[in-house]
Amino acid sequence: MDIDFNALFNDSYEFVLNSEDDFYDAFYTKFIAASPEIAQAFRHTDMENQKLMLRKSVAYMVNFFVTKRARKHFVDIACLHKDQLKIDSTLYDVFIDTLLDTLAAFYPRYNNAVGVSWRITLAPGLEFMKHISKLD
Image 1 (cartoon, rainbow, N blue to C red):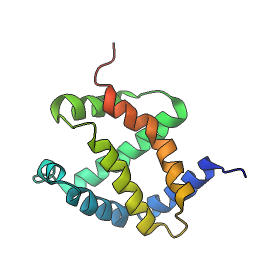
Image 2 (cartoon, one colour):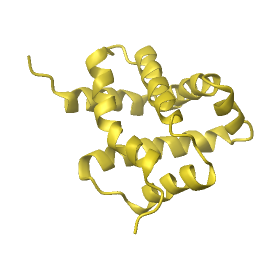
Image 3 (cartoon, rainbow, N blue to C red):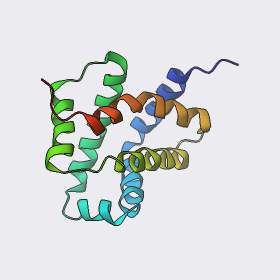
Image 4 (cartoon, rainbow, N blue to C red):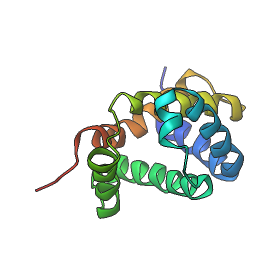
């Protein structure tokens, strides 16, 4: 059996792009409810701006997966999360799990292979976010 994870990701990501306001609203509702630490981190956040930043961040992670190049803005985001916001690396697992829970609730063709396609695509960017704060 062949599985085209790129096609699965692209189809489901296109679906998200076409309903991103509702999708990201639902994501943040679930994400903030996932832990007191996350709720505390977002308590004074402009959520409209935050949703815009997340849209861009997902696009940067997709680009990173495709090109294996960390653009300056993506490096800056990683540094901000690690050095200034002091984001615990375990929260990236909560992030991807919540993102996929939200996708499962929204995307009518969601199945395990779609979830795996998102994990494959976003894993390099999430690992970058976890481990890289400064590049020489």
